[in-house]
Amino acid sequence: MNSLKLLFCICSLLVSNLLLSQDCSFSINYEQQSCSEYHLFATGEEILDWYVDNVFQVTSTEYDFNPSTAGTYEICAVNEGCPPETNVCETFVITEDCLDSFTLVSENEISDLFSVYPNPSKGAVNIAGNVEILDKIHIRDALGSLVYLSNDPSNEAISLADLPSGTYFIYFSSAEGVFVEKLLLNK
Image (cartoon, rainbow, N blue to C red):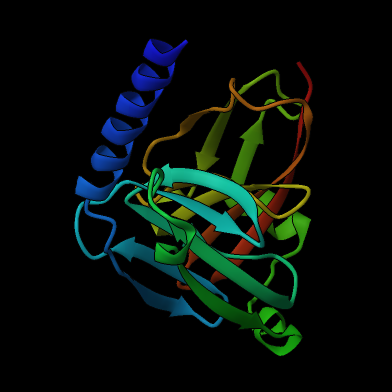
């Protein structure tokens, strides 16, 4: 029994030393791209877990935050394996006025500019039309979580095969405004 306790102590000491030797200090910066659009990133090359209001979003060196509803949001970057006191959090307040400032185009106007097909989709979505005017395409689920982002919208085929069935919103961002199209994913 004593050898088992000794083995546990040695393993615990090794894990503790491993955690202590890990550099847990990091910081994040962000670029405000509009009143409700932020690009957050680690100042080094740390791969972090990003959370919005304690809900996991992605593991990456960066995170794009663009909520579709007004509110106060806490975004936290977590370096897995480090103590909670090393987490870095920022609070963002998105107002209705901010969201209302976007030029949202009607569905009829969108159909003149872009065609999203098939809709409903089983996972592959094609975008045809005037894609050269776009700066970015991003897709959010019904809760507003970012599920897809492309800063190079010249790619006209999008695979959403890893997403569950449900309602999604495709945001087409350009100098003229933000165009939103509803997408149904049925698998």
